Image (cartoon, rainbow, N blue to C red):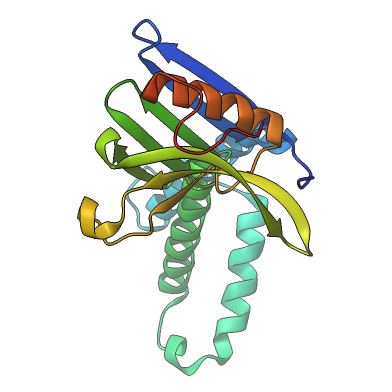
Length: 228
């Protein structure tokens, strides 16, 4: 038994089957598929208008250019009213306060746009290179990727184990067994979990494990007894 899954497995074979990449990733959410791009476009348009509004406030554009954003003007009016009681800002003119608010709004909006652009579906992958080794990769929802290469000389076996997850839920997970650190020169753990963020169901793990073993070692059975 394993946890609820809403993802897909992509298999990519190149170089006449000498390199295979197995990628597990979420099925794209409704937000990412339909709302992300329009929302980014709207926010980018708002950002451009706000920058022009700041330029107009600083007299960097012609007076005939009238930049008016109702919600932004309401926000500026509210801020201008509330800062009257702030001692630090009382010495500033109305124009300086508006410029400060616009700059703050631009910075915050830019951060939101950057976060939305970076937002993507997480994924885990294992790249198996024949006679070379294995590369494990994990990408989080913000696009940050963690990679680790395990050379064939350090690889003992690829196995599937049972374990407990969450509230005593029994799951299957696949891992790469590597040589002890005093032999491989690595200070890391000798067990590398494959697909750590997704933990696919057993049928997927069995297929990936068998194909990976076949490509690396020329057989679906290694040192461990295959019980699949």
